[in-house]
Length: 287
Ligand SMILES: CC(C)=CCC/C(C)=C/CC/C(C)=C/COP(=O)(O)OP(=O)(O)O
Image: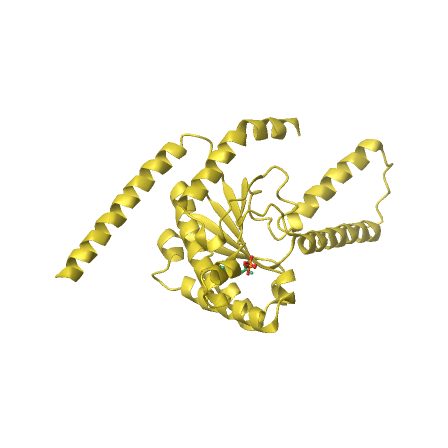
């Protein structure tokens, strides 16, 4: 009897929170809304330490926080959400910690592919972003499987950055772009076409083409630049994350550890973005 009353009360509280959230989001959506929110998941180990829990507990709690952020972003109509799940620098951590994080990643990717997961419920497309060749084979295979399995989902996108660093991404894009240009030159030479006169406008145009070309080769090319970057635990460093994509991004750094992030932080980040929006539009027009 007590169990039934308890269950009923929980369901009642759950649904009233849902309607209150929906009402809040409706008001928020009156203003300009971000299209893409990125997260640096800082403070998972500290969360476990603060609570005298085993280290891995913090990362597990961090994953749950990722899932609630994904749910709120979906409800808000934010089409892209990116997370910095594992940097290239993270490979320098102890062998046990790297192994734990890889195992956790594998377990969570497999969980995400289950029928009843949030991914399927919301129709989220998953993208793994980074130098995936650096991952252990089982994780890489699972990541590829997840991308394939969700390729037809169109409601929103979750970009998971693993074995990622922005300098690696830019280097990779520059190399791929130069290789492309080199191939074009070789092709021109073999076609024995005449070298046209080099004018200032042509150099200018070439510079623009190169820039566009680099963008075209970045790992993040499939998403628009993020509008908001949230880094938890009060840190304001970018830590080699999305350096190419954050020129006009609003940074928000709440003083909570990542597993503690909640609805109020996300709402505050969006309000902060809306405050900056007119200025951002002015800058974009000037470019
Ligand atoms: C499949 C999927 C989405 C998995 C995500 C799992 C997850 C939450 C990964 C976080 C990994 C990480 C190194 C976070 C940084 O916190 P930290 O370890 O640096 O903590 P600290 O800042 O307290 O030292």
